[in-house]
Image 1 (tube, rainbow, N blue to C red):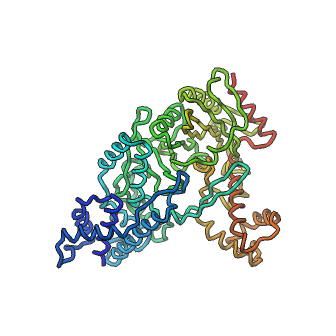
Image 2: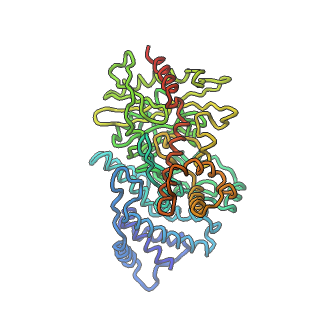
Image 3: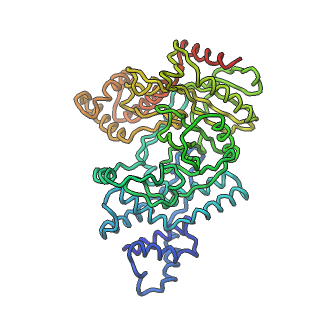
Length: 535
C-alpha cells in the first residue's frame, strides 16, 4: 500500500502547488528511492500512471480557503483542516511503513518527525525558487499577497503542522483591559523517555548554532535538533543589514513570523533596533513587528540570536486606548501617551518614523539608568543591569506607532524568579517568562493544563477535596478564591467559568510583570519617570 500513499502524497503536492505537473514523475521517483522501491506498479505505464493517478487523486482534495479574517488563529477553515488531516493520514502511514521496515530509529514522535520531514522535503521547491516567486508576487501584486503565498507554502509543506496546531486550546477572556487571547499549547509534541535518553547521549554539535540560524534551511536534523528539509527562508534587507524572514512552526496567531539576523549575534535593544523595526514595517505595512527584551527573565527563550516576531494580527494591547497623553519638549510633533494596559506601556505616534525613533532613544537611554527606590526600581545591583524595553512597531493609517514596554528583571529572596514576573501564587497556571507575545495580550500556557483542568472539572463537580489530590492540590487556593463569585457551578457552566478564571489569572500575570502598578502610588511613580524624560 506504500505505493498508493506515494501517489496520494504526490497528488497532494499537485493540489497545493508544491509539485508542478512537470515534476510528478521526478518527485515520485525520489519517493520510490527513499522507500527502497525499484518500480512503480509493474504492469502499468509508469509516466501515464503517475500523471493520471496524481491528477485524479488531486481532485479528491478540498481546496483550502485560508483563514476567514486577519485575526483567525491559523487554521479555522474546515476546508483547510480537511486538507491537513489528509496529509497527516498519509504521513502517518508512511511512518508506520518506515518503522515496520527498520528505516527509522524507533516508533516515537521524535524519529517519526525526522522521517516525515525528510519525506516532505522531497516535494519542496529549491530555496531560490521560493525566493524568486515571493519577490515576483511582492513586486507585481503586493507585500500582503507575497506573505500570503509564503504562509500557504509554509503550511502546505508541513513545516507548520496544521493538524497539531488546530488541537491547541484557544479562547477569548474578557477583562478590564480588553479581550485577552488564551492558548494552551499542545502543538509541541512531548518527547518519549527513550528519545530523551538518546538525545542526551548523542554527539553534541554546534551546527546549526541555534534554532534560528539560517543554516537550518534544508537541514536533515538529528535526535536533539528538528529536521528542516521543508523549511524555507526569505532574505530581507533591514536597515542595511541582512536578515531572514520565516514563519514560526508553532504559530500562536495569524501569520506568526520570525525575522532573524543572518549573523548569530545576541539580542540587543538600541537605536538600531528601532530603525530595523520600522524598516520592516515599511516593507510589510500589514504586519506588526516587535522584539523581545534583551535581558534574562524579561526576555524571550532565545537571547543568543537577535530576532523579531511579527504577523498579521491585532493584539489586545494594540487595541488598548491611551489613558493619558503627555508632551516631551522638543518632540511636540510626536504624540506620546500612557496605554491603558496591565503592563507599563508608552505609545509614540507620528507619520515620521525618524522623529519617533529619536524620542524612543531618549526614553530608552533614560530608562536604562533610571532608579526609583520608592517604587523598587533599580537600574543596577552590583553592576548588573535590570532595566530594558520590549518595543513593538506597527502602521496605523497614515501614522506609525511604537509601543515601548518598560521591563525590569530584578530578583529578591521573596521573588527569586523576578519581582516583575508572575508571582508564586499564579505559578499553578503560569510560571514561565513573559515575552513579547504575552506582553501584547496572548497567553501561551503549558500543555499540562489540558489534563489538569479536565481533572479539576471532575473534582469540582463531584465535590472531591482538591488538597488530597497530588495533581490538583496546587489549584486548591485558586478555586477557593473564585468559587464564591458564582451562585452555582455545574456541568452546564463549569467550562466557561474555568476559562474565565484562567483569563483573569493571566491578567494578574501581566499586572505582576508591570513595573508600575495600576494604583495611585504606581501612577505617581510612573509620573516621576515621565517627568524625568521631559527636560
